Figure 1 (cartoon, rainbow, N blue to C red):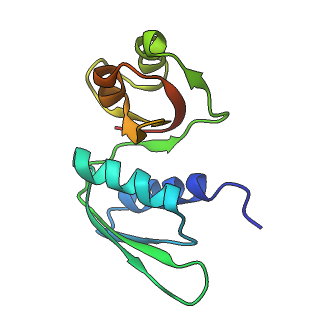
Figure 2: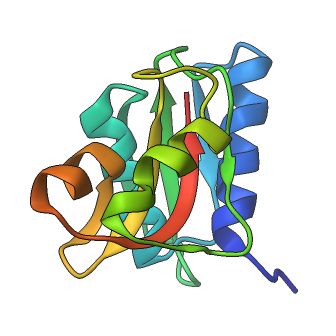
Figure 3: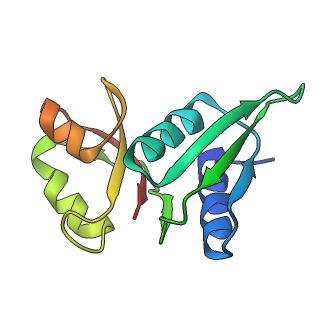
Length: 129
């Protein structure tokens, strides 16, 4: 039994990237994993992904660009105010304006930069750089 499918997905992506693979398969799938992959695709960390129905929970086939140095989930999922985003960036990202934090907010799953633009806070899900 898996306790955190998002953590497993990020580990699969990180291991495939470190080993020089061009693609990986994430299973089981979920809406949250799909939304996180969409944010990573929009930021240019993965080239594309597709959902594959397998009769069970489904899976994602992800094509990597080789742009990922590190990625992972943030546990526990801290609540962050819009005024505290800078402090959290300093804690989880290696340098200013390098990498991104993925957050879940009332506006959906977005990056920390988009959350600053909208002026909303949320809960931290993952980081990637």
